[in-house]
Amino acid sequence: MTNLPPLDGVRVLDFSRIIAGPLCTQHLADLGADVVKVEHPVTGDDMRARSAKGDRRGPAFLAFNRSKRSIAIDLGGEVGQDLARRLAARSDIVIENFRPGVMDRLGLGPQQLRDADPRLIYVSISAYGASGPFSDRPGLDPVLQAESGMMSLTGPIDGGPTRHPLSLIDTLTAAHATSAVCAALIGRGRHGTGDFIDLCLLDTAIGALGNAGLQYLSTGRPPERAGNRHLVAAPIDLFATVTEPIYLAMATDRLFSDLCTVLGRPDLPVDERFEGPAGRSRNRDELKVELEATLTTRPASDWLAEMGHLPAGAVRTIDQALQAPEVLHRDMVRHIPEDDNDIAVLGTPFKFRENTVAAFRPPPRLAQHTDDVLASVLDLDHDTIAALRAAGTVV
Picture 1 (cartoon, rainbow, N blue to C red):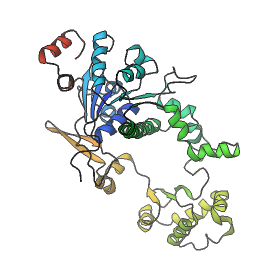
Picture 2 (picture 1 turned 30 degrees about the vertical axis):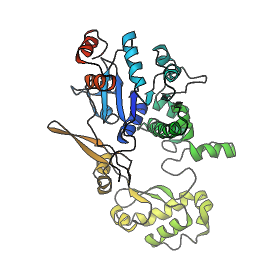
Picture 3 (picture 1 turned 180 degrees about the vertical axis):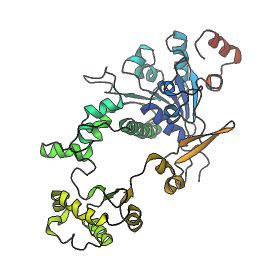
Picture 4 (picture 1 turned 135 degrees about the horizontal axis):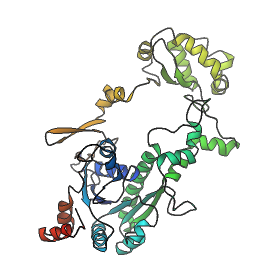
């Protein structure tokens, strides 16, 4: 095992806020990068406003900002802009998620910064991309859920379109951005130059349509809303028991046969109505009636105890999920010491055998590391920093 995380020595200058950008830079921090979070001197990251806590570090901010250093700079003035350019010149990666054109007007656009340093990797995350007819429009995750067709697939079969309450498009965009940054770092190591990475929520949302999108492209017919069922395959659905429902996903012939063995229903795999995936899909309503006739004879816990070798699960609440032994075993709930308290956060999905993940540090208070960053990155002395603060350039 190496002693250093894989991105140790890489510096990220993070101008992003809300979710997609900050979650990407949190991933990079977990991988060992030094993430310097540039915030507005008064409001900071927009997510801070959602906290009732005095330090403005509520759940919406804590979720996406651990292990970063916060510096507050007034980018509305030339001195602040120049300070940001000097920080970018000492960074490997710049990430921002303003609307296209905003950073250019501040003198911090991709062309401006990469002309000064061709090795710089510049990541722009926006709603609709750096080019295209909607490029100047704002957009957030739920709007893109609607525009991409995702909401048309979500909700009860006989109900209306429904937004998923989690910010899935933001989360996927953050994952794509993390992958793109790591790929660009490898590319830079080979040919010596950085890149401009143009990521947008629209592309992420359309790409996430997957087999649903291909169903339309292949047949010319968009899929219909399926509720808790799979769009095509069966049995993949929520099924009633004597107690609470359980979710089963057993559409292949082998899985369906194994399910029927557990249920003591050898008649179902040989029933011509349920022969093969096509038959089970075509007769899914009848199949559900047959399966629930047996499942409703025993409680969910009994069935799940016998289905440990099958893709079956309880429908948990979030508190149940975050207390589940398999979740705790994977360190997906962590506690970061801070002063006399611990800050509870979700763990990182990164698990390595030979590398290590960086130790978690508390999400920063607004401007907590301004002096530290200016001194350690730009070598500014105490008097210079004090003058910048007195002028209102930094906080």
